[in-house]
Every structure is written in structure tokens, then in C-alpha cells.
Length: 557
Image (tube, rainbow, N blue to C red; front, top):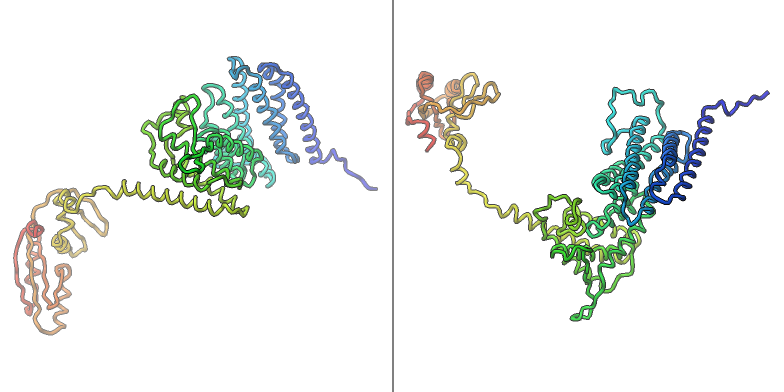
């Protein structure tokens, strides 16, 4: 008789059934929140006690479903948690506010909602870290010490579960960046730097996903005349997992830039001349460097639009390329203003400098080169005929950069006035000159070698048993030196070899005719030793004492 097991007794089936029940309850809560938002008349209707209770229940069930090993649609749970729990309430509140101004009560409710979201996603990061033992040096994980009990009694996770957990961490970082970006709409609350930080951490966590680049492009709208936004949208499209809406955002950015460059006909040449007519709205006339930089960026982005999407070349595109390169060379000579330490996010003047820069920073130059290389990659992948002209344009940019580096190097390094060698030696202490440059002093140092192998160096230190030992720079009494020349007589070579064994440290050099000079130290302590050296010669040798002199006189010579 065949006996079948009940599906209820299987732990896996119980987990699947629990996940299904939680998912149904989650969808019920989602429908209730949608109904509340559809009937909201003012911002306060979104943050009633009932709405807050439903959102708390939604976050609790979504967090439990994220850790369910049997759930296949984990990305869908992340999306429901973000959109229904936080994003749609913020977008609805912005739509319901009057005259684009927040009242004090509305501002407090929205601020509490956003800050609770920041706290929830930080809690979720800590929970994912301890549940799956995640660690990284590139994101702000909370500090968990090894001696704590987090995750010790949990079973090891599979590779699919770890991959899903890493995707959830990436999603948490993007949500934290979005929440901080929404906080910027509330005066004196959010900062652009904090949103930048979370987006860049998401890029460090998984560079293959292009969503953070799209968010950075949205955050950098109008910065540097739209250069930053277009750069990030292109980077998003180049990722292995691009964001679908990035291409539409890039096209809209190019359309806004094309409005700045109307086409005018030059009377003197009969050809079309491209000229930028950009004025900061409400800020009045810009400075001359700002006009030049703005004109260059507008022309450059117009060319980037043609190259990236491989559009039909515009009239006289070669003239536009030439004008763009001339503007680029002129902009490279503009330098950073002296008052660049001000906070660019605190006043209208600083915001104007951020949106309309007066010089090309190193970050802007890097983004310009990267945009050209991305356009070149697209044209070559499509087999376009415009790739050759873009290669010439990129080569011209590199030549201008190399020329600028060469000029800066020549101005800052090669034109420096260096002191002459004679002046340098004259400025040094006399003791150091005598101790390093005088050849005879070096010979006298070698003559002071004792029988035990120790070497004493005047003014330079002691060397004991091969180890240098510093000595104080104390003026020592002058020592007399005697130079002795010894001439070998012609005789038996065996006798000469026997006499040469007795001379260890006194012989310094030997000439070709077997004349040798010995420098003897004739101080009071070593007089007897010098006499022994002189008197200990062979009878077949002539010893001639040449001279006696002080050590200082010998150094001067």
C-alpha cells in the first residue's frame, strides 16, 4: 500500500505557503494605500494615522519577504517597498502643494516621512549585513565586531541568496540617495553631497548597474552647462545593465542644449556661423571667461549629440569643429579664481558659478574626453563614416592638452633660477667642505685605522665594529701629520714580501717605481707608534721624511 506524505509536513512547503500568504497581504495593503492617495485633497491626507499604520505594516511584511529563500520575485518586492512605501507619497505631496511652496505643517510631515525612510533603509542595510555576513570597504556598513553574536547560529547561504542580498544592498543605497535628493526640496535640510555619496557607493558596490549614473545625471542637471548630466547619462547607457529611461533623459538634455546655439548666417563669408547665445536667467551678464566656457560647452555638446546618435551631419560641421577647438584652447588658459573656497551650494552667486563655470577644471576636462571616447565607441560599433572625423577631433584635443601641460611645466619648473655650484659650496659650513671635498683629509682618515679594525673619523662620527655611531660636532685639537716616502732597493723579492706583511694600515698608495708614501699621525698619543713604523723598516730601504704640517694647512692645500 502506497503512503503519500502530506504536503503540510514538508518544511519547504510550509515556507512557500507562508511567503504566498505574506505576498497576498502585502498586495492588500498596497491597494489600500493607493485608495488613500487617490482620494487625498491636501498633503495632510497622505500622512494620517491610518496611512502611517498601513505604511508600517507594508514595510514589515516586505522586510520579511526579502529574507524568504523560496521567493522568486525578490526584485518586485524591492520595487513595491520603495514605490508604495515612500516614492508615491512624496510625488503626490509635491503635486498637491499650492504655488510650489510648503506650509509649515506640510514641511514637517514630509520631513518626518523622508527621515523615517532614511532610518528604515539604514536598518535594512544592517539586517542584510548580519544575516548574510556581508562586508565591504566601499559603503557605510554599520560597525559589527567579530566577537558579537550576529549571524553565528545561522546556516550558510547559497550563492543565489548571496547574490540576491547584494542586489538588495545596491537597491538600499540608491533609495538612500533618492531620499536625500528629495530632502533638498526642504530648505536647510538635504545636501547634494550626501546624495552624491550614496550614489557613488552604489557604483562602487556594483559598477555593472547603470541606475546610479542615471540618478547622478538627474542630480547634476544644469551643472556645468549640462555637461555633468550628459556625461552620467552616457555612462549609464554604456553599463552592462543600463537604465531604460536614460536614453530619453539624454535626448532631452541635448534638446535643451540645442536651444542655446541658434544658427546665424555670417555676412562676410556667406557660410553658416555657429554662435552661442546663453544668458543665466535672472543673473544678468556673465563675465568674459564664463561666456567663453559656456560657448565652448554648448558647441561641444551639439557635436556630441550628432556623434552619439549618429545623426546626419549638420551644415559646415568642420567649421563648427574648428570653432570648438579654438574655444577649447582659449578656455584652457583660464585659471581658478582666488575665492574658490566659498561654499557653492549656499547662495545664488555660488550656484551661478556652479552652473556657469569660469574655467575648465580637471574634472570637466576628464568628462569631455570620456564623452568623446564614448561617441567614438558608438560610431565604430555602428560602422559609421563619421568615426574618422571624430578621431581627428579627439587627436586635436589631446594635442592641445599636451601643449598646455608642456607650457605649464616650462613655466613652473624649467624657468626656475637655481643657485650655482660655487654659491652652494660657499654657503655650506667649512667643516663639511673640508670633510667631504678634500682628498688629503680622506687619506688621513684611512691612516688612522687601528690594528683592531676600528676607524675614527674626525667630525663625521665613529664606526665601531661596522656600526656607525653619531658623535657630537666638537672641535678637536689639531694633529700633526708626517709624510714618509719609502724607496725599495733592488734585492731579493722574497725579502721584500716578508717586510710588506708587517705594513697593514700605514701604506696608502704605491707608485710605478715602487715609491710609497705613508701619512703618519704625530700627535702626542701616537708618536711612539709613528717612530716604530719609521724605525721598523728594512736596511735595504731608504726612508726619507719629506715634511711636517698641520692638518688644517694640509686640508687647505
